[in-house]
Image (cartoon, rainbow, N blue to C red; front, side, top):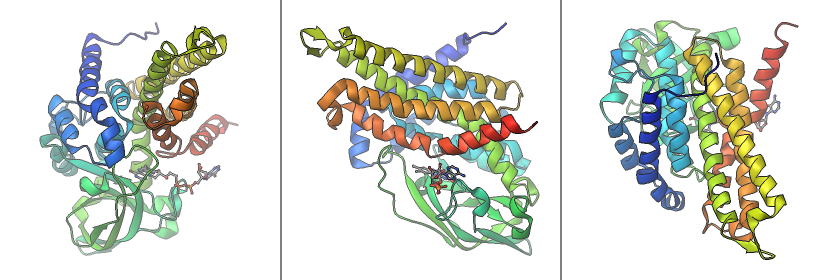
Length: 382
Ligand SMILES: Cc1cc2nc3c(=O)[nH]c(=O)nc-3n(C[C@H](O)[C@H](O)[C@H](O)COP(=O)(O)OP(=O)(O)OC[C@H]3O[C@@H](n4cnc5c(N)ncnc54)[C@H](O)[C@@H]3O)c2cc1C
């Protein structure tokens, strides 16, 4: 049997996340966008409410929730404010490779840090010269006794300005290509770690995005993720099977917010003697928006279900992330169209949502990269 019903506990979790978003996030969305203020108070409140670090296993003090639970929560948080969702989910993305590949000591120490207090961790893979093409990174880690000496520059790192620790991808053996990559946990206050200025982004301005430089940073060998060299690529990429469902849920939340605004506006604004939604052209636009949102959520829930069921979800996560991200861009653009001139003004929320939607097609693997993954998966057996 195929079921689309969520459990009573998941319904309670959704209600909790929705009420939290309505009370603590949405009312601040415009202000955060204008001021670029990092939403640390709201992140602390989310931590207190049990809406952060959902995946961390109970053995390390977490709630041990599944990917399905995560996507339910993340859709609501992004509905509240996409920048808040990106900022707070930095922990989800960064914890994922530690949960799947870290040593017991690493899990206990670094996942424990995230659950015991409102703290941020950041995933540092992208570099100025290497985004989609991860194998082109230049960061290196050279073994020196019981330590590694880390050198390199990372770019576009979410949460970097607030992070207590970073997941960092580096080459320990450049000759071995991606099999020569290793991952490290690097604490932000270690000598040689420095930050760039907060980037001025098109949207999602509550989130903090910066460059991070590592200059002769001495990393204890105990912080080599998993304790084995050459597993970095695997660590970094498997994290995406857990995180892309959450990013697809963010995109779905953005689409839903834009659709709700557009529907409401179409029921207020009159042209040619009728409410906007009584014009078939507008009603069909709203109908298409809703269909795409339903499809985004269905793909997101399917990949989340696969991840929780132990089914390899690389392809389904790419479908969900690509479709939901492209849908968010389309639906927010259509929402602006429904508002007409008012949609183009920053006085109304749909312009902000349209700006927020764009990055969904870029980060965590762009829409082109998702198609490359799907293409690779569907031609694997040919
Ligand atoms: C707000 C924000 C937050 C981010 N947060 C993080 C983070 O926390 N951690 C982190 O490590 N990174 C982060 N990133 C980086 C993000 O993952 C990269 O920007 C993304 O992977 C694309 O890399 P790039 O910008 O170098 O673009 P490029 O790789 O240079 O690509 C440029 C364009 O070409 C397309 N393209 C590239 N190769 C191909 C190809 N073979 N075929 C077809 N099209 C192609 C891409 O889709 C893109 O449209 C963030 C980025 C932003 C903007």
